[in-house]
Length: 261
Image (cartoon, rainbow, N blue to C red):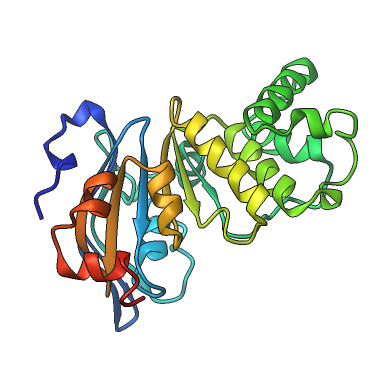
């Protein structure tokens, strides 16, 4: 499938999927996916439930690896590195490619320790360095002013929206280049969801963001490009404005207009 993004120079591409097929035992979940995601850009993945968009998102940092029967064909590359090569350090990969899930999943520890957890795992021990990093990431996640006086209290005491922003701060703390988001606002109230969208728009200046969403309006607000998935295939991949105003496929038009899905 020829796309706008496939024409971009490689040095402008953050991560690329080529001829990706995914199987769970005898069931094929994805068929010949070819997508390239530009650096410091937001791309939305849309489509009905069960269409493969979350499965595809998880192929980008190998979150499917531990699912029984999982098998992938094709290539996913960051620069010249095939992330499915046998020598790949998956811990280092997930440092480069962070993930925010649908429901907030703060660790059962303090707000401070949630953010400091990743850097500590990767060898940062200096308290001054950790203090600065925690403050910086909480500021980036628009949470610092709300929690700066209770950093050493349990993260479980935060609201759902605050917990999701804390999880985002935790992802930012390991300095990824790419952030994957699997419906990050769908479990939140409208005010908290709006804050997450504002953060996405701010963070795209520094990070490549790929977001799965069922919310068509959200896709229009935050993304520059959109991929429409259906039955494990990419039906259409285009600039978001173009897709929503003049889709090339009748299937895309029917989904966006609410005629199915």
